[in-house]
Image (tube, rainbow, N blue to C red; front, side):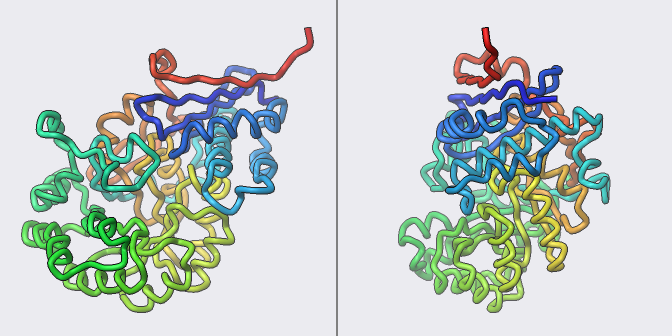
Length: 405
């Protein structure tokens, strides 16, 4: 058995997404995905990865992951690591199809059939157009196109009470919001005045007034603040019973995160953009993270993500796989969540799950009453819809084993 062909697919409508398809020559195709800088990752796949992969046995997943961990780019979530992540996910999907087993079985079997979810309150076009985490890239709706029921970013900013009630009606009892980003951008994360701090906390006042403690709330900081101001905001939030503070500082400021962690009883959720087991080990060793977040599409694939899950378990920390990127990333997270005992909750984005995720793939994990379950189909259980390949905005590149005439 050999890898006979590698395809990449990216769509102009979703310029941050890249799909990698690995063919085994017997009709099976593994699907991988990564997010951010799709054209750069596509170039790496064809320039660097394809020559190393074509003709190789796709079942040697760990060995191939090591081969693709190059001399540069291995310690960050740059194009090399994102490309390696997508390849690795595709290889796991291919192995599942070959063996007739879902990924969660290959990871040791389910520890539970369903896992609890939380809703990240993004809107339909959140961070779609550019590889930038900024207010300008929030994809906020205009008055003319605010037609869907799940414009949840607009919702948490202006109707947080209604949003919380809507989620509870669907059985979702946890939500994540980021009301401080606008003020961080205004000052470079170095200051927030009392009036702005009061305004930023208005969604929390509305949520607690409407639904009380029935809704858990996580606060996302997107690593936009300095140590002093992050600590100031966290102190002001104490009255709202927050479930976790996510990335108040950049994840490479391990000492600063550890200082913040010691200053609060609320756990810090860290790891979304972290790459490499050694970096996660430093976070754990120094007490800089109370919840370990991992994204298989950024960390080095499922091969690396399962090692991170084991590390989290060794330190007695809960795992929370990341979403808010794409449908394959969500699916990988669900297989990881349902197979790892330490996984506490799975991130979801209902604005994405109910609209463009199913437009791109079939076989999404099923959400019901605040929980999600992986398909029992072989591999990941998801596949790009055939019409994706026929889209006029699709760029498809292929690398194949060269044969002599």
